[in-house]
Every structure is written in C-alpha cells, then in structure tokens.
Length: 265
Image (cartoon, helix red, strand yellow):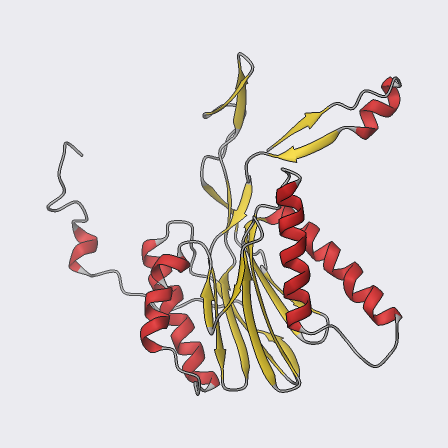
C-alpha cells in the first residue's frame, strides 16, 4: 500500500507526473528463506507461496485495516513465485517480504552487473561486493523514510571461498555459516545451530534444509508445501524444479492444539 506526496512546482500537469510514493505496508509478500554453507558452496531454500495482505481503507483521514474493497485478508494468493535468483556469475539472492520491492532490487542489480560487465577487464563482482552494495541500498532507502520492505539473503562462491550474508530492510547486515529470514529465524535457526557442520555434503545439506522447511510448513501459516532449493558452487547456480515434501499430520498435538490453553478460547 502506498500514499502520495504531492510536489508543488506551479504546474498541475507536471505535479501529477512528479508525485512521490512511499510504501506504507507490504501488500504481496513472501515468507522465509533458509540458507547454509556446505563443503562445495551455498544452498538456499524457499517456498513459492505469496500472501496478499488485507486492504487498507481511509476513514476520516486515517488508514485503517479492515475487510473493505475486495480485501483478500491473508489469502495465499500466488503459489508459483520464485524468490531465489542468480546475480552475475558468483552470487545467489533470496528475498522475504514485498515482492514488488524485490523486483525493484533485481532491477538495481541488473544495472550493477551490466555496468560491471561493460568494463570488460576480466574481473567480476563477487558475493561480498554484492552484499555490501545491497547493505548500502537498504540503508539509503531507510534513511529516506522509503524502505524496501525485504529481508535479503546473499550467498555465493568466488575463488574457492564460500560467502553467506543477510541484510534487513533497514540495512542491518551480517555474515554467518547459516541464515534464515522471517519465521525461519525463530524456528529454523535452532535446528541449524544443532545440526550444521562445515563439511556437509550436498545430500546432507539438502536434507537439513528440507527438515527446516518441513518445520516451517507445520508452524508458519504463510508457508506452503511447494519449495525450491538452489545451490551455487564454482561451476555456477542451479535451481531445482519445485517439489513437495513428505509430511505427517497425525501428531497428537495437532489433533487438539488448544488442550491445556488458558482462557475462553
């Protein structure tokens, strides 16, 4: 959802074209990204579901959240959105949050990679350079009170060295051996802390990511059972075809989830 800031320069026609917009509320959003380093590079997992948030309506000059104007509520609106993309030769990007802002970030990165290739000097941007660039972009937009509503995960391999980092919507960034966004930061990171190791094979890394995504499917109502796993090595980026996980819904806690709960609910 956006609101408009009119710019008064004495020309009504130009004013209509020069209006500045700010995103107040993420409207079409994706959920968690989970990524890990493994012995040959970086693995990254995301599901393909995207929610459409409830409409915001104006009431006496204020923006209020309700079920007006054909709202979808928190409907799972799209089920085939890829949120993992290759960036240049050495990097892989995943994003949670507003999909339109992610598309804008991809446009920035296309221009960055194109300008880098135009030098034709035999060098190319590595994952650390792209991560630093994204940190500056997110912090710059935050300072303009017009943030890009995304949390980004950037992984890559260059000169035999794996790299994995994250950037929040206000420009907070860090590197780690495993990262997760959204609910994954709360539900998947404990699993990764217990089970991740530096010498993980590709097969073991995929199993670990699938375990994390299965937990998110059980506990995050925004997640769907349709995911992709991408890997990046010295040879390049490979993104799997979408597939579903085997699930088990007969846990006793699932049959009566409110047992022992306090209150009238």
